[in-house]
Length: 152
Image 1 (cartoon, rainbow, N blue to C red):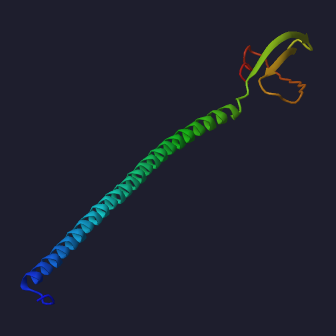
Image 2: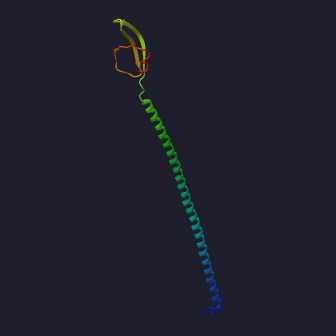
Image 3: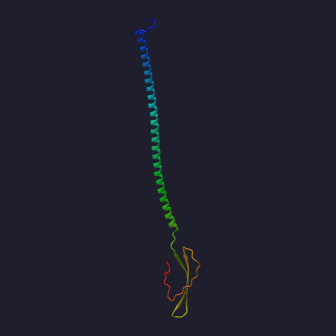
């Protein structure tokens, strides 16, 4: 009976194999659970990374929109300023109407005959615009009546 296996030995070997099988199953389950926990952690990290990227992109888009709005406002203000400056420059460049001022220097009456008098009148005439030098001799057959040339 030394070489024979008894039923007890067979049960002992069976329980040892069963124990080893349970231990390996427990180890596999424990390893699988650890892997799942690690994968879940990595997925959470990756999910947070993409959320942060999305939030940063949204913030960048908001900033870009705000800057575009500011640029549009600045451009609009600049165009209004240019329009005002152009209007002022045109007003300054617009020619001023010519104004004439004269002063009576003297008057001489000479009698050529008894029925008619010949008059000689000297005036200084000034304008607000440059004009070519002019010497003018005006003759008339009537009487000069005061301020007829005041705003000529």
